[in-house]
Length: 308
Image (tube, rainbow, N blue to C red; front, side, top):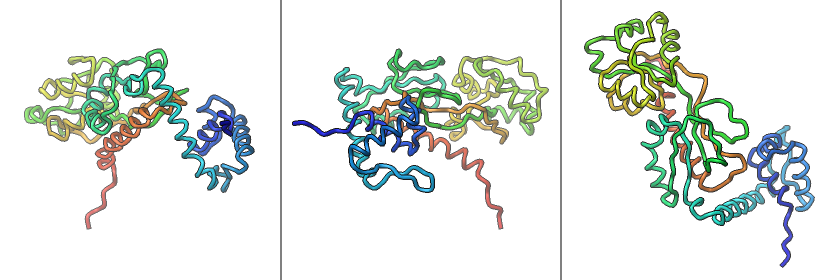
């Protein structure tokens, strides 16, 4: 039986353009020019005998027939992708390999991972921690979580920003009350090797730039510095994503309201053109978790109504 199918490149152009509703972004994803995407869409429309896109106030939108056709095209690509992974090795379909920075894994991802496993028991997560850039192909990585602001050649989703602020255990304040940032001069400051500028930046923003920051214990991770703070070793500089549980439980307190936003944020990354279902499932889950993590900070920064 001979099948009457449109060209594969035309279908890929249509699916990408429909997802972005933008020919330029579709071209970037597919690694071709905007003109090539436009041409392939015209080839598809000529083959189908109807238009799949139209312009509405200079905005690209799907026609009714385009909307009706899109689900079948997406399903076909999903099935083809999963079949390809199955033939490459059944383990690839059942296993999701995640590369993440060590602190993020320990302080944010791992405590939430059981929820993903409960929702998707058919998938096994392999978690690798690394500080270096991810080579998805060479390292056989499906997705990554990194701190940064520019991800050329990759698809990315914003998770949340990175704010820094001092924390300490409540018992420490009974002996050395902190009424202003200048009072930190009387406390031991705990440092993280990989972020040596945290204390100088925050103290400068808080109006206490003269407090020395060259003394005090140094740790190779935020996790260790925060644990030392819990046990009364001094005041540590925390990142919002890594310390919320301790703040909620009262094991740590933030004596000052200033949270200094860093220039880089946390992002979820995956290779362009990889539409594997396992990536889509993990992406949907982690975006939901990230939205929940942003809620406490948004509530703190949301303007409050004046009492009447």
